[in-house]
Structure formats: C-alpha cells, structure tokens
Amino acid sequence: MTKISPSILSADFTRLGADIDAVSTADYLHFDVMDGVFVPNISIGIPVLQSVRKYTSMPLDVHLMIDRPERYVETFADAGADLVVFHLEATGCPDTCIEKIHGAGKKAGIAIKPKTPAEALLPYLPRLDLALVMTVEPGFGGQKFMADMLPKLRLLRQAITEQRLACELEVDGGVNPETARLCVENGADVLVAGSDVFKAPDRAARIAQLRG
Ligand code: DX5
Ligand code: ZN
Image 1: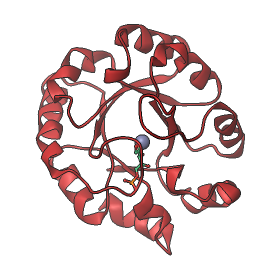
Image 2: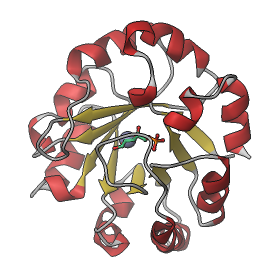
Image 3: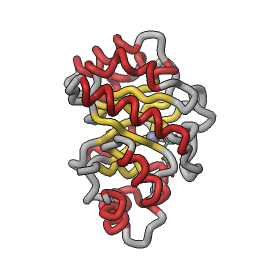
Image 4: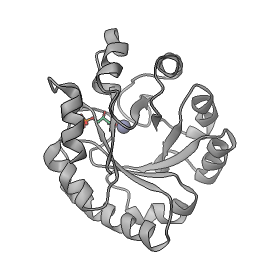
C-alpha cells in the first residue's frame, strides 16, 4: 500500500504537537531541514527534531536540504531520524554519507532536484533504503507539481523492480489527490504531502484519500 509522509513544514509550529497528532495515521512524518545555502530558505533543525523524537513514535523521514550533508548526517541520525535523506547535488561524497547513516543504524536515502536526471541515482540504488524524486524545486511548500518528473519515477521503478531492490521510491512537492494518483501510477510508493494535508479540515481523511 502507498505510504504517506506529511511534511511538517506546513504545520503551525506554535502547536506542533497537536499538528503531529492530527496526522498520526500516516506512515512517516516528513521533516524538512533547509540551510539557506543549498536552498533559498531556512527551516528547522536539530533541537526541533530532538523534541519531535521525544513526542512521537512515528518514523521520522528527515529531508536534508543542506550543503555538504556529510558534516551533519550522523548528528541528525543521533537526534532521532529514522531515515536520513540527503541531496545528491549537495555533496561530493555520497558514498561516505550513506556509510555514515548506515553506521549510525539508520536508513539512508538520496534526493534529486528537478534538473538532475534519474540516471544519476542508479549507481546508488542497491545501497539505498529510499530514493526521493523532487516534483518541485526544493525550498518551499505549496508549489505546483511538475508532471514532467513522472518519467523519472518510471525509470527508477523499473530499475528497482529489475534488480529486486528494497529501495522505496518517494516523491515530494505538489502532491494532492490528483497528482498522488499520477505518482503511484508511475511507480512511487511513498508520497510526501505538506500543504494538501495540513490545510485539510479532516487530515486523517485526507491521508486516507491520498493513499488511494
Ligand atoms: C519542499 C519540501 C517539501 C514541502 C512539500 O522543499 O521538501 O517537503 O513541504 O510541500 P507541499 O506538499 O506543499 O508541496
Ligand atoms: Zn521535503
């Protein structure tokens, strides 16, 4: 079944606990870290992750939109991430990042921005727990879904199936019930959704609807 990972970037941070409770029927909780260098925005980081870790038992899907993630992947692992996802474009040493994350006992993922071809991820897939295809330019919630990313999902799904890999295939950006269906049809099995879930009056119902 399709997994849903609500992004707390769209939560109300003055009532983060209540907002997490409202999405607790989801499979993962998506935690967006932005450094103002790799992306033109700054969000939340280590102290917030530590608090969220204490608050919820949901698996924490930590999306690092930071430059040279090799400096911080172990810190985020220790702060409570279950899955640490870094950007391929942000590092000169993706293998080191994967080794550090796995060495800390956590799952490792790599994300690619819209301009990065899916082929760039292929050499890493056998060692990854998750591959993340961005369907907006990273940095902000509430942007429009880029349908021209769908062929990347098909290519990665084919590689995962052919090689019988355990790697999950996640999409992030502009997911709503309509685009969720397109993502799943093209091979995604984990959907990040920020604004669509948090603006819904009944968030549990919206999560169920996104699952399809
Ligand atoms: C964007 C973040 C996303 C964001 C998605 O850089 O990585 O996780 O929260 O927001 P929506 O679902 O509103 O596009
Ligand atoms: Zn994200």
